Image (cartoon, rainbow, N blue to C red):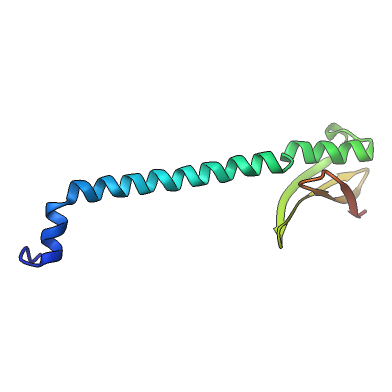
Length: 108
């Protein structure tokens, strides 16, 4: 390392300030991520709520189905859950709008 280089001299002289700046930047990024998660939680149904909406629509309980699976999907600003399960040997696929909670049967 060439200590006569002005950039290196600047970094050595201001290392505490640079480290402080980087820590503040990291904390700011963490705050942004936290706020995004909070906004997501407030605007969308939870996975358990989406499953409960499907079970209510079908008149079944989670104890009556097997292979229960759920996926959260987004496309072009629209978010939904795809809920799949098997009941009496038949596979069912439902779509639950993540904002409104509207349940649509996609496949039986």
